[in-house]
Image (cartoon, rainbow, N blue to C red):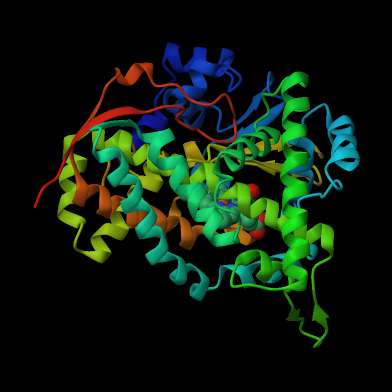
Length: 438
Ligand code: HEM
């Protein structure tokens, strides 16, 4: 017999679903902010959907996302990202970076095999279990310090006062950057993320390019320092990265490759992890049963891991990322032309009711977390996932120990999200809470 969710797929489209399929677009802010209904209609009636206003195909079912991300030969990351980056303004953007930013450094990791395989091997040297483990106690200290700081006020903006400062401090520790540049990192991060957000005007692009020049000049300085005097940090790992290929040949990174990887590390884990933490606060402030689940899990490592995984499944920070077809290809009955731009809609894949029953319910007892696509999958699967999971686990545990009665101070409908396709990022989350004693 059909599961109820599959039965939903088998039923005729409702008028509302038809309307969404006929007129909906991710360029529409209201649809983007609460994309659940739109994606549900697409999964049911148009799983491979051409969003004409965006000029991209949205891939919305879990199994199709997995198929595409597992086939880097047909679905190119390199073309997908380059096509989407600074869309329509690429030449000008690159020229500014060459003129004022020390160079235009294409994202070496956003590439295709076999080149990607070499770069990934070298980049992994900076993400050893040892590096991640070494960061854990320092992350816990930063978390406790931030929570203590806001505790006295009994209210804060969970995004601006906790999530963003925490992830930025972790990046400063991880890469070995200077304390005191946290505010700049936040600006640089927004400017970089906007390049794959698909929503920037020319004025935005010019300002963002200026920020990225500043970022690159800063990082180039740090790289030059580490070339001469390596330290115990990830910039040194990358600058001095060396591995042997299967023929015994030594592989190292060119300067522009290393620069692009360090830039990627600074950005890729920043907004994403901060968003996961903001989402955690939102759930705790609005769903009391989730507070109880966290309280029950807090002293049980495995239960806490499952709690974090369900948070990541239910509210994936990354909404949709790019691919491009390198030849005409059929996906789920739809023929995509060569050069088609695709967006893998992770936000939809994790809500696929045929894989995750009752997807909008928070259920840490699910047994198939391996199927969620929050960190992508295949050769480009997130390289920082162990660090991200650890960071979220540490803060979840400390929130449970420090805070109770977390409440929003605005109606949930008034929460706003950044205007970008790539992520679903809460802008502000004003909350009140009580300090837990004893
Ligand atoms: C909750 C936090 C995070 C989320 C949701 C996330 C999500 C993702 C996703 C979906 C991809 C796949 C991209 C694709 O296939 O096109 C990815 C790749 C990547 N992530 Fe993360 N990420 C997170 C944290 C981090 C952190 C902390 C770092 C590093 C410090 C990081 C660095 C990267 C890099 C470098 C890649 C590219 C890997 C490759 O192409 O081989 N991410 N991430």
